Length: 162
Image (cartoon, rainbow, N blue to C red; front, side, top):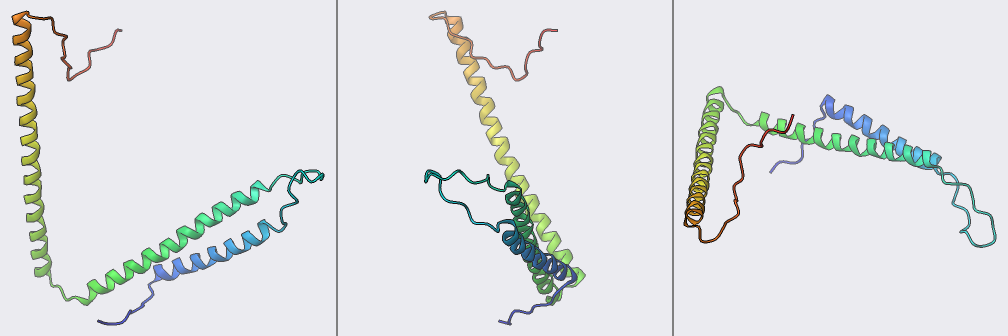
């Protein structure tokens, strides 16, 4: 097993610069945005203090979101670079790629045929059940033993009044 080979692409360098800048912005925003400490709790005979600075909280939330997205971009770029490096290490000729694509296409076609077979079987079962229910309801209604409530649901909505 080889060690971790860390080669920095332009995308990774750019993402790192943005992530480091967003980290600095988050630190500065948290220090500058909240310089004062909260006042005494209410009820000690002192008048209540000023309302909290909501604008500072909103800026902090936005900067935190940028911070998270920037470091997530660094992780994605790093993973992309590692995958591309590993793919580049494996010698694969055009014939190997064509063979792999042919194999994948055959597997996809087999899976698609199997899924269609399951769908068609379920559809046939549904049709048979609906046909049997309709026949039995018609026989009960024809016998006239007891009035049955129509349990027919149309597949299409009737047109509305104009």
